[in-house]
Length: 239
Image (cartoon, rainbow, N blue to C red; front, side, top):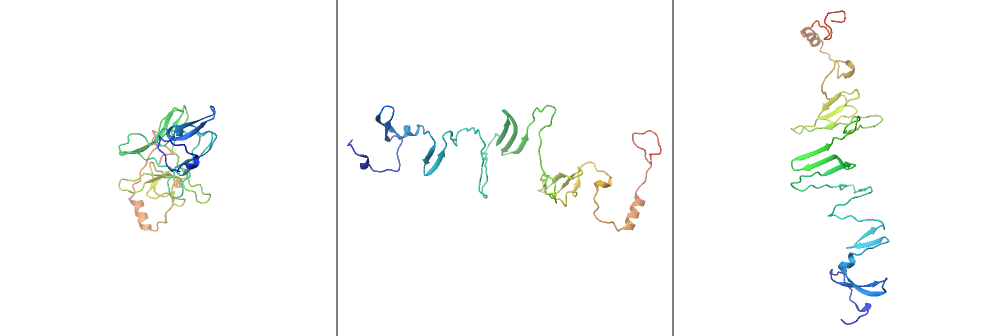
């Protein structure tokens, strides 16, 4: 090969893995050649910028880069800051997936599992030994507006597509309705389970002005003497 100076060389924008470049070995004070493939396997220390296909990657001196197609363990908080029009994180399960989409662990033990499969959409809050304390919990917190607060609610869609919201009112009575409860509607809907005749659990809708109908209902309603179930004899408390 004819000897050439550096300025005699023709510039190139690409290189094969077997192409060679000159390398000055500082420890030996000699000039060597190295293939592009072996050069890329080397180490870059001290931090700085690495150009990768037109993009600039800032690499701190203590950083270990993560690869796309290998398992990565992150030891510090990862923050995702997407634009307003794109999702922050996508977990895309392949067709025929039999594993979980997301698993949260505590001290090596699974605690929460998100399943996304062809025949399964499920979130599991797993059991765990917590001594005499509480078990797994699911919180739907309230609208905390100072003027018009509203309860949190769970919506289970009926088979026909109708919403079925479930929530507690401020007196602890559970209610259900096809519409999400707001401050003005949280005492509406249908009461779930045992109902009581106590007036404080009821809300007046409108005055009933059908007086003849009201009197007829009184006449048509059977009236019984009764005793309380925990007593064996009639006394003054029995009616």
